[in-house]
Length: 252
Image (tube, rainbow, N blue to C red; front, top):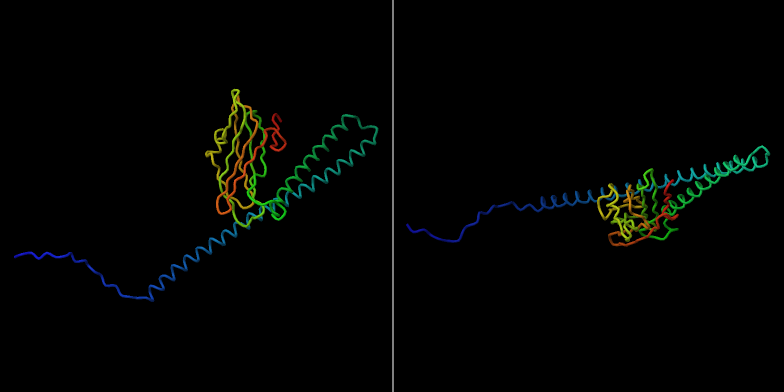
């Protein structure tokens, strides 16, 4: 018997047409997406308020410490004035008291700077807005080649949203009679990437302990920060090693 050749027949499945059920299914999916979006929004709001409360608490703590140091300074000044009138006070004792007063004045001045800094962050209307490299400090250790570095990035002018991006840090100096730049990741075991990621709403500290080569003489620290998003910006700043701005006291 001859075989009849023809086109291949597809298997068809008959499915009931239920528009109401399809509508309910789509409505359920839309509700799930809407609920997820709402939860994400409220979580972001909660996290933002938490960061703001922590910053406010820090400012209040600094203000309390500032008032305490000011009171101690006034008491010390009064003591100096009283002792100077007494003939029994010798020159050595007087000098010790003067040094104590000087130390208290330095502490008060430092606290004033910190209070002004955090007030500027918490009061955007009084500051110039945008991504800012606020300050850099380097503290020495018992090892003359080992230092603790801290870089503060801030966002002032608009704290309603988070700022995120990458920062790069280089230590510029002289090695073997030549000018060289050492990446932070090459002198610190705590930093593994050239581009250091940041994400914050008010401020963020980048901290690292670094060990400089024995034949390296540091001169400057170069910091560059690049934010992303619709309001992306790039800022860079040089800090002279050993200057007041970088706050490094080698040998102390």
